[in-house]
Amino acid sequence: MAAADKPNVVTTRWWWVRHAPVRNDGGNIYGQSDLACDTSDTYVFNAVAKVLPRKAVWYSSNLMRTHQTAEAIWAAGYPKPASMPWEADLAEQDLGRWQGMNRAQFIASRPVGSSWFADINEPAPGGESFMDLYNRTRRTIERINAEAAGQDIIAVAHGGTIKAALGLALDGQLERALSFDIDNCSITRIDHFASPERTVWRLPMVNQQPWIADDAHAAMHQPAGPEVKKLA
Picture 1: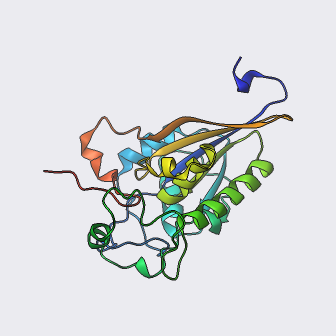
Picture 2: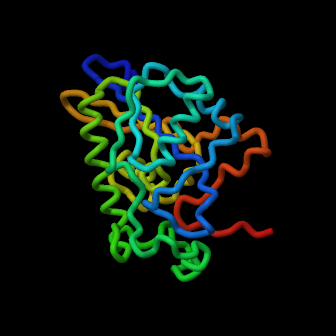
């Protein structure tokens, strides 16, 4: 019998949505820079709106690109919720003085095979480490799990934040979490099962892209962290 079918088990489902693509970054690392995103691809938002559960509670980071993404989902037919709290702790990693640096040049300067901007414990100069991001994301997830236990939660956030949430579901295995791709507008679902005896996480889907059958929308792929460019 599945955990969700057992008595005294509270199931809370997290539906993470990464924000829409940022087109005005100039090819630079943007981290917590508050840049706008491109929500013009209505086909993508129509597909996302159909997948997300109704009667969910909504949260977003405090950065405008998550608010614009949520607005585009509602404009595509998802019933607008009564509220959507902005959670600063769900913002992207603060990459400090790396923000504004040319992304390709920075990645070329890092060790081959790096799965993130730096080692998980290495803070960006004047900013955070990925571990800092993980700790604040975990703290916020645990609080919202208590506040919205048993509900569907839609969280519009960032590639780094969603990877941090995956790290929590993987019992703190952050390097494994960083190996996942998280594309713009993709949906990642993480279920939390709580009983008096224990809690369990499950990953029903990661980086789902309900529009992916149509190659015309491939521009939803932007790296959320270092990425080796595909050979021509």
